[in-house]
Image (cartoon, rainbow, N blue to C red):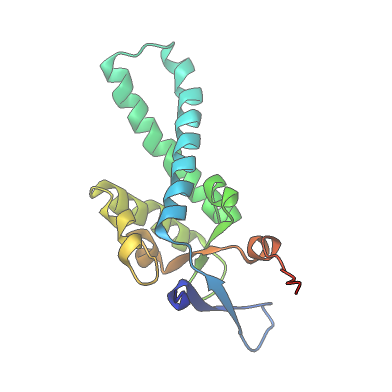
Amino acid sequence: MDHEHDYEHILDRTSPAASEKEIKTFRLAGFWIRALSYAVDLVIVSALTYLITTPLFDGDVAWPVLKVTFFYVGIIGSFYFILMTKYFGQTVGKMLFGLQVVRKDGEPLDWLTVLFREGVGRFLAQYVFCIGFLWAAFHPRKNGWHDLIADTYVIYDQAEEKRLQVTLNSEG
Protein backbone atom coordinates (compact mmCIF):
# COMPACT_ATOMS: atom_id res chain seq x y z
CA MET A 1 0.00 0.00 0.00
CA ASP A 2 1.43 3.35 -1.05
CA HIS A 3 1.34 5.91 1.75
CA GLU A 4 3.39 8.54 -0.05
CA HIS A 5 0.37 10.86 -0.13
CA ASP A 6 0.27 10.74 3.70
CA TYR A 7 3.47 12.76 3.95
CA GLU A 8 3.99 16.43 3.28
CA HIS A 9 7.14 18.48 3.27
CA ILE A 10 6.83 21.77 5.10
CA LEU A 11 9.38 24.35 5.96
CA ASP A 12 10.37 24.95 9.55
CA ARG A 13 12.40 27.89 10.80
CA THR A 14 14.59 26.52 13.58
CA SER A 15 15.44 29.97 14.92
CA PRO A 16 14.65 33.55 13.93
CA ALA A 17 18.32 34.03 12.97
CA ALA A 18 18.40 30.95 10.72
CA SER A 19 19.35 31.91 7.20
CA GLU A 20 18.13 28.67 5.66
CA LYS A 21 14.96 26.78 6.29
CA GLU A 22 15.09 23.15 7.26
CA ILE A 23 12.77 20.81 5.41
CA LYS A 24 10.85 18.49 7.71
CA THR A 25 8.56 15.65 6.79
CA PHE A 26 5.37 14.95 8.68
CA ARG A 27 2.67 12.32 8.33
CA LEU A 28 -0.71 13.86 7.60
CA ALA A 29 -3.59 12.83 9.85
CA GLY A 30 -6.43 11.15 8.01
CA PHE A 31 -10.16 11.69 8.26
CA TRP A 32 -11.07 9.00 10.82
CA ILE A 33 -8.45 9.90 13.44
CA ARG A 34 -9.41 13.55 13.05
CA ALA A 35 -13.11 12.66 13.41
CA LEU A 36 -12.38 10.71 16.59
CA SER A 37 -10.34 13.62 17.93
CA TYR A 38 -13.22 15.98 17.14
CA ALA A 39 -15.69 13.69 18.94
CA VAL A 40 -13.55 13.88 22.09
CA ASP A 41 -13.48 17.67 21.78
CA LEU A 42 -17.26 17.81 21.40
CA VAL A 43 -17.67 15.83 24.64
CA ILE A 44 -15.37 18.30 26.40
CA VAL A 45 -17.20 21.34 24.97
CA SER A 46 -20.56 19.81 25.96
CA ALA A 47 -19.33 19.16 29.50
CA LEU A 48 -17.95 22.69 29.81
CA THR A 49 -21.21 24.13 28.51
CA TYR A 50 -23.21 22.05 30.98
CA LEU A 51 -21.02 23.13 33.90
CA ILE A 52 -21.27 26.79 32.93
CA THR A 53 -24.96 26.99 31.97
CA THR A 54 -26.55 24.72 34.61
CA PRO A 55 -26.07 27.19 37.46
CA LEU A 56 -27.51 29.95 35.26
CA PHE A 57 -30.80 28.13 34.65
CA ASP A 58 -31.26 26.12 37.89
CA GLY A 59 -31.72 22.88 35.95
CA ASP A 60 -34.76 24.18 34.01
CA VAL A 61 -34.90 22.20 30.75
CA ALA A 62 -37.67 24.08 28.98
CA TRP A 63 -37.29 24.49 25.20
CA PRO A 64 -36.07 28.14 25.36
CA VAL A 65 -33.30 27.07 27.74
CA LEU A 66 -32.17 24.37 25.28
CA LYS A 67 -31.93 27.01 22.55
CA VAL A 68 -29.84 29.21 24.83
CA THR A 69 -27.66 26.24 25.76
CA PHE A 70 -26.97 25.49 22.07
CA PHE A 71 -26.01 29.15 21.70
CA TYR A 72 -23.55 28.73 24.59
CA VAL A 73 -22.16 25.54 23.03
CA GLY A 74 -21.26 27.64 19.99
CA ILE A 75 -19.62 30.37 22.05
CA ILE A 76 -17.79 28.07 24.45
CA GLY A 77 -16.79 25.77 21.60
CA SER A 78 -15.38 28.67 19.61
CA PHE A 79 -13.30 29.86 22.55
CA TYR A 80 -12.15 26.29 23.25
CA PHE A 81 -10.97 25.58 19.68
CA ILE A 82 -9.42 29.01 19.15
CA LEU A 83 -7.54 29.20 22.46
CA MET A 84 -6.37 25.57 22.52
CA THR A 85 -5.14 25.73 18.93
CA LYS A 86 -3.37 29.06 19.42
CA TYR A 87 -1.63 28.22 22.68
CA PHE A 88 -0.97 24.49 22.24
CA GLY A 89 -1.30 23.86 18.48
CA GLN A 90 -3.83 21.18 19.39
CA THR A 91 -7.01 20.56 21.31
CA VAL A 92 -7.37 17.92 24.02
CA GLY A 93 -8.76 15.49 21.42
CA LYS A 94 -5.73 16.04 19.19
CA MET A 95 -3.42 15.65 22.21
CA LEU A 96 -4.92 12.25 23.00
CA PHE A 97 -4.18 10.99 19.49
CA GLY A 98 -0.84 12.73 18.96
CA LEU A 99 -2.13 15.21 16.36
CA GLN A 100 -1.13 18.82 15.84
CA VAL A 101 -2.14 21.76 13.64
CA VAL A 102 0.69 23.35 11.64
CA ARG A 103 0.91 26.08 9.04
CA LYS A 104 1.85 24.99 5.53
CA ASP A 105 4.82 27.34 5.50
CA GLY A 106 6.19 25.90 8.75
CA GLU A 107 5.89 29.15 10.69
CA PRO A 108 4.29 29.13 14.17
CA LEU A 109 0.52 29.50 14.35
CA ASP A 110 -0.39 33.17 14.64
CA TRP A 111 -3.68 34.71 15.74
CA LEU A 112 -4.85 35.45 12.19
CA THR A 113 -4.27 31.86 11.05
CA VAL A 114 -6.00 30.43 14.11
CA LEU A 115 -8.97 32.81 13.83
CA PHE A 116 -9.44 31.96 10.15
CA ARG A 117 -9.10 28.21 10.78
CA GLU A 118 -11.06 27.85 14.00
CA GLY A 119 -13.46 30.75 13.53
CA VAL A 120 -14.37 31.34 9.90
CA GLY A 121 -13.23 27.98 8.52
CA ARG A 122 -14.79 25.81 11.23
CA PHE A 123 -18.05 27.77 11.00
CA LEU A 124 -18.27 27.17 7.24
CA ALA A 125 -17.14 23.54 7.48
CA GLN A 126 -19.64 22.73 10.21
CA TYR A 127 -22.71 24.69 9.25
CA VAL A 128 -22.89 23.61 5.63
CA PHE A 129 -24.06 20.10 6.62
CA CYS A 130 -20.52 19.28 7.86
CA ILE A 131 -19.41 18.90 4.23
CA GLY A 132 -16.30 20.94 5.03
CA PHE A 133 -15.20 18.31 7.57
CA LEU A 134 -16.06 15.39 5.27
CA TRP A 135 -13.96 17.08 2.59
CA ALA A 136 -10.84 15.85 4.42
CA ALA A 137 -11.83 12.24 3.70
CA PHE A 138 -11.48 12.81 -0.05
CA HIS A 139 -8.90 15.57 -0.32
CA PRO A 140 -5.47 14.30 -1.42
CA ARG A 141 -3.74 16.22 1.43
CA LYS A 142 -6.46 15.38 4.00
CA ASN A 143 -7.54 19.04 4.22
CA GLY A 144 -10.96 20.12 5.42
CA TRP A 145 -12.35 23.49 4.41
CA HIS A 146 -10.99 25.07 7.58
CA ASP A 147 -7.49 23.81 6.67
CA LEU A 148 -7.81 25.13 3.12
CA ILE A 149 -9.00 28.54 4.32
CA ALA A 150 -6.12 28.92 6.79
CA ASP A 151 -3.36 27.07 4.86
CA THR A 152 -2.86 24.49 7.62
CA TYR A 153 -2.37 20.76 7.96
CA VAL A 154 -3.21 18.39 10.77
CA ILE A 155 -0.21 16.14 11.29
CA TYR A 156 0.98 13.43 13.62
CA ASP A 157 3.25 14.98 16.23
CA GLN A 158 6.82 13.81 15.55
CA ALA A 159 7.61 13.22 19.22
CA GLU A 160 4.56 10.99 19.52
CA GLU A 161 5.45 9.18 16.30
CA LYS A 162 8.97 8.51 17.61
CA ARG A 163 7.64 7.36 20.99
CA LEU A 164 5.44 4.79 19.27
CA GLN A 165 8.19 3.32 17.08
CA VAL A 166 9.51 -0.14 17.85
CA THR A 167 12.45 -2.09 16.52
CA LEU A 168 11.83 -5.73 15.73
CA ASN A 169 14.61 -8.29 15.82
CA SER A 170 14.15 -11.38 13.72
CA GLU A 171 15.73 -14.54 15.01
CA GLY A 172 16.50 -17.24 12.62
